[in-house]
Length: 132
Image (tube, rainbow, N blue to C red; front, top):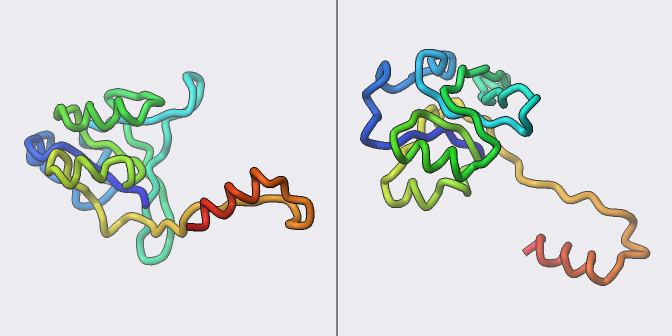
């Protein structure tokens, strides 16, 4: 699942806590982009069963999730990423989630592979491992 997050100490600075994703344009955000020439990632949300995204105006943009997390922990702003990445920081209280009720559900990852008839042993082992 994706999650919006920010550091606990800065929670009420910078226009308070956003109550709706569209309010993110008034906040300091930490963005992600795949490569230098690409547009920053648009943050994805859902409202009443309809998906929508928000083009935040990041103060900092990177392609490194670690930089995003560390910057958020240091009070650099709000960021957005996969929950699994920030779970340790959430558990320690270094980060808090935001806009949880607006996040779309994540059905999980999919693995597509060729016919089972001629699977290489290494691929079969990988598939078995992922299914666990």
